[in-house]
Image 1 (cartoon, rainbow, N blue to C red):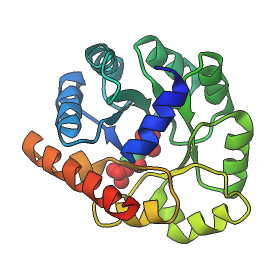
Image 2 (spheres, rainbow, N blue to C red):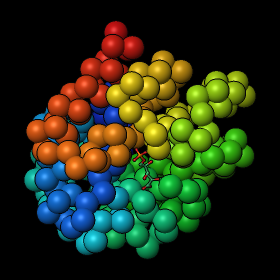
Image 3 (spheres, helix red, strand yellow):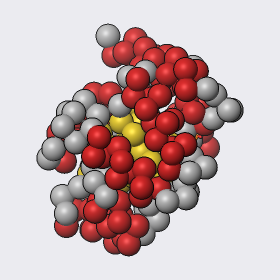
Image 4 (cartoon, protein in one colour):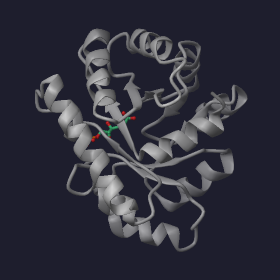
Length: 212
Ligand SMILES: O=C(O)C(=O)C[C@H](O)[C@H](O)COP(=O)(O)O
């Protein structure tokens, strides 16, 4: 899938699941539970030991499914981005802005979503060719900042991550964010697979409700 379609799909879904597992098997199981609930944009964080194995498994499994996009998260440097891309990651997300990571992703035409906290970082991310600009930590930067950033930069496709939950996901979207990233609220707290699926459905419903 070309990266234009990947970015389009992420925006259409509106919620990116940040998956942190104790091992690849755990990460795959959480991802499958999210996909079952409709959150079909999956960001496998590199904090998971052998995260690349989970990326490989899911990227292979869903290679022919245009509704599912598999990406990598917590990508701190270009080396990690390259590993993720070789395993089949269709998008790369970073918690902080790293220009070399953005360059590498653009070299291989893979969607890249660097994390930013300041307006200056948002501008740098756009100038370097970010496809979506992650706002991290969303709960610290805050909703007021989204409006403020969109004043001078209405073209910035923003995706807050960190502290996003079912209750506030719709508000972020209403503020003009193209998508939200959700970790703990979606998969944390020792949820069973069934509970993750139910939560994923609620996230999707929250986003749909404000877009309708
Ligand atoms: O790993 C990265 O690249 C991140 O920066 C993602 C953060 O871990 C998420 O923001 C999770 O946050 P919660 O949804 O509050 O759990």
